[in-house]
Amino acid sequence: MILAGGRSRRMGRDKALTLLDGRTLLDWVAAALSQVVSEVIVVGREEAEGIRAIPDALPGGRGPSAGIVTGLAAAGGDSIVVVGVDQPWVRPATLAALLGVRPQPAIPMDGQYQVTCATYSAPSLSLLTAIARDQRSLQPEAPLLEGTVVFPESWRSWGEDGRSWFSVDSPEDLREGLRRYGVPDASSRPAG
Image 1 (tube, rainbow, N blue to C red):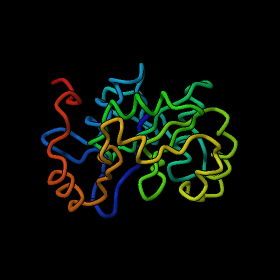
Image 2: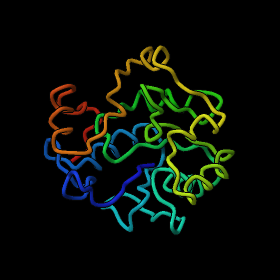
Image 3: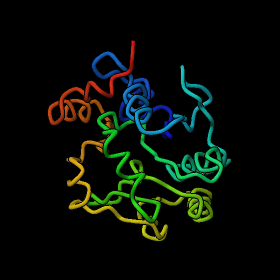
Image 4: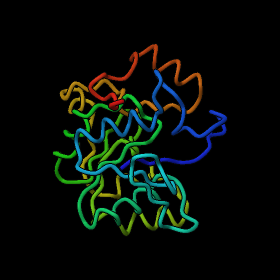
């Protein structure tokens, strides 16, 4: 599942449609996810070209938790893997490793909880719904989800270096991501 918000003040446009090496951020994230899950869904949108899109199900809810609630409802009880649309360097190997962590949800810790590059499960639905309805930040609430915090010694053993949750929130972030990580892995490149 891809969390896709709308227009970004810092980007000056819709982040999902921001180009990186000729592809949108949405394309990069969808390509990585499609290597790990059977269906990619974009949450928080009415439409997304070539990908199933569903608007947030919680009227008045906002932030990642509203999108996660929508994704869990669409998954019908299965665990979901969540990636922010602004995380084009996400590694399929990291997503696969997160899905294998027990108990779910599995949220990486890298100075703070990486709630938009994590897995979530149905038992978390009521707490996530309350967080979204109250418009609270998911970051400080993450420990209450009673899953697994994935600390650096674990995610580093997967070959992860933090790129999977590097967020592009501004043109400067895009330049910094390219400087640090280069163009996203060609194995995550969409066809076309």
